[in-house]
Image (cartoon, rainbow, N blue to C red; front, side, top):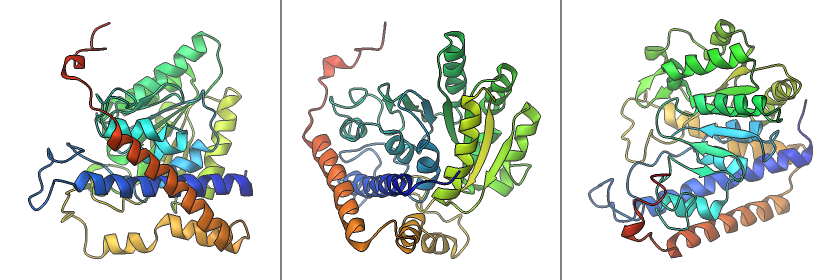
Length: 328
């Protein structure tokens, strides 16, 4: 299963949009945080986890999804949200804590919920996996179609919720695809220091499901592997586990000194940035021209600029609204 030219352009456009969104959010995030960095200052207080470099993991999978399919993500969610079609204006407003945000400004960047496209994420490690299983159990009981994609980092594959979710998905034969984004670092702890197996896809055998590993951080390779699995799941094949080799081009969070990285590692990863690499391939294959590339980038940047402006201009919620929606 290979992507069509139209699908390749869709993936490239979503990658460009996601990267520019992260770059734009970073500028806003750093406002008011200099000369002394204080995470609580500025228009976006709190932590910020950027997904630069991991865009192929989102687009290669989400290219196969329908709006009614379920996607859960984790604390580094923006690339997945963009690929799933979360409303950019309301997403940015939520990150800025504004009333017009997806959750009225209550969740921030790690807790984005858009029921219109069945997307959610959470900052608790491995928290998104059980809800993905539950969503597909609900669909099964109601005899409704659909698949669920549950994203996690490789560090979360050592959490209890990961193993419990895989076990139940296997027992009930539910159409859940667990996606491990392996960027080699669980905060500042390397995979080699924390995980007993070199690749998490081998753990799938313990739960009676197929495991697939995709190296290279390439959109087309991820598209092909994910497409085959999702097509089987739609026919009743049950769950699967994929580990995708990827790269985290920024720190764990904005402000991370990254002193734990070996010398030269980050520079080597940046040299293999998947977005310019994919653009080069699309141009070589005749899918993208210099003119169409400029137009695509301009349109993507305009969408993000409009979302940033929407977030800035939106009002903050009133103090008396703080307890709204807390209790049923």
